Image (cartoon, rainbow, N blue to C red):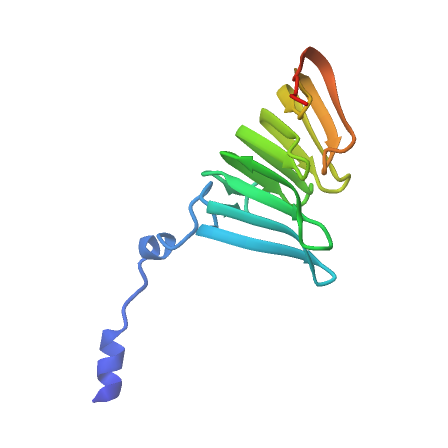
Length: 174
């Protein structure tokens, strides 16, 4: 009697129901809220990434992680002191290329409080450099420089503005 009931309760699979479980094209495989990730090397924390939302697209032509609501990356030295940080309203990370793209209200700050402001900044992890081909404003204690295009090491110690548009000397009181 039990075998007959099992047999009767089985039904043919509906192909439309099965297809409804498929991953839709263009949709992220993973979505996470309020993320905070530490990246370490030899048990030393090197970076801290925080973001309100993360979306991972693995099936795309260029697989990437998207930060649609922005992100903050802080870099630490061996003494666990923040040496620089980058903040943006939107971002992407292309893992295969080892490239970060920061867009909209991008602000990068060094341990000396030198500040770079732009609407587009790339971080090339392989070559340990940041760069932009957009308008930039570089603010230091003694001067503010504006221009088009920027290239620097990650700590912004060796930087260059490609097409300087203006320099303002900031006078300080002695």
